[in-house]
Image: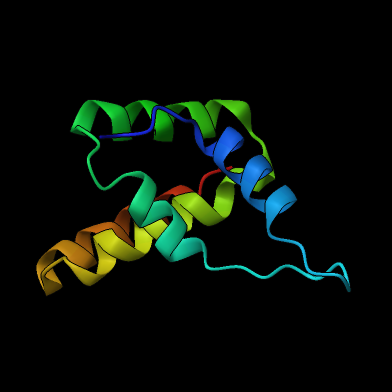
Length: 94
């Protein structure tokens, strides 16, 4: 069952509970995100992405990066080219 949690909540909890004694992070973000969204619907994923983007909290960026990695790894060369062009076009805007 999908755990209805936002990226902001997930990472706040994750970072607080995964500190070692020397205060460095012991992170396995990929597995944590993939496990949390294993049973999520597309609506759940969309809501989490939109909430992460609207919050503008930097702590959500690693989770969004995991989603991007999944997208990239499972895209054809043509889809990758489309993604690259969209990113390129958006970085050129004033």
